[in-house]
Length: 488
Image 1 (spheres, one colour):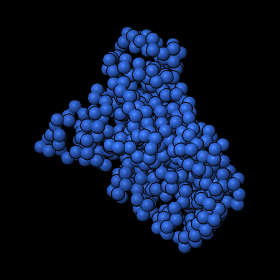
Image 2 (cartoon, one colour):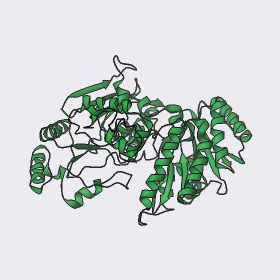
Image 3 (cartoon, one colour):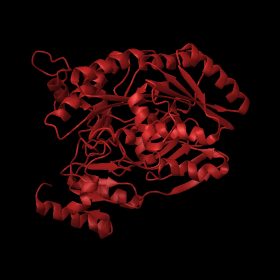
Image 4 (spheres, one colour):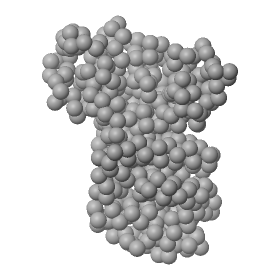
């Protein structure tokens, strides 16, 4: 659908499915949808649609299937891997208007919600019952639960309470062909293959999620946070391993280097020790007795691990300030440079000190500053590479540096993503992470759900040709390992 006539026909057909104002096609209306939180990649879509009902989603997908028009589903647009990047010849389907909390089941501690519900809104709605939804990405005030499922989002408390996949029970999904699937169940287990885990983190490649049943947890009786300062980033990284090895399971364990903590302190006045090379935020929750005991235990471990200063929040207000700095770290770092590039790799905890040292070496080699702020407890790194897109070639150099960091994560026994997904950003590094046989299986799964490859095409799973061109796949006698997959 590349000509203006084709586009006009598409618009007319979509306006028969949706109210006229729910079909966006003018340049000024399309621009806000040209990228997600990773603004390095931008593309204006052909049309944006804003459905409000399941029937409208069905009809849109049916129309697009019949006309072979690709569809990209989008949540709140807070993603950081280019996963919601639109297609020039495709339709971007925003699910923002499906924003109702359908039901809160107090007895079973669950909530049924539509995909456009904000992450934080779930906890706000459950708060009066003494319940909350555990995964808490830094963008939780804005990000949608549908997007969280698509990317398997985490957050500062995922060390103890898990990622999105550990906190959902059931999904309602519509395939590109209009088939309704119920994946998972209201019980803690369901027979057959674990398609719930398959769908969670599938980045919109397999189906459109229309409803999510999430688990709710009782609010902890007590919680407090330790701030530990270190005079060396690698020492702080080693302290993370020491805490876990000593049998302590914090609710959250976050690391910020000096540049990050200074930026956050300037932004929200968090009260951080500004001369520290790095700080750890270690939160303990549970019963009052458990918290008191584990706080003392954690402080002892941090002291023996080289902490130069230890503070325990003296009240809830100070605890909230400590966390406010961490939650605001990404926007705060945005004040340090015209642009920054946020990476998302995960490594074994015992490799943190080693990998942070190697990242520092790469920063010097590429002459690009890197700010570190991340979920240290589960080894989920978020190096922020500072650059200026107005300088010729600097974005390309930044992308190359980001790729090198992800490859270091793989070498260290980790993975190229922890919660942001692959999207467009890390698609080349998928060629490093997986071999051709593994990629073949990924394509087979995609084909089983979406045989015409119309849902978010070109994302997350690289073609074998792309991997061969990237130089990360062995080519036999001038041919790809699996010539039958050349169309991928």
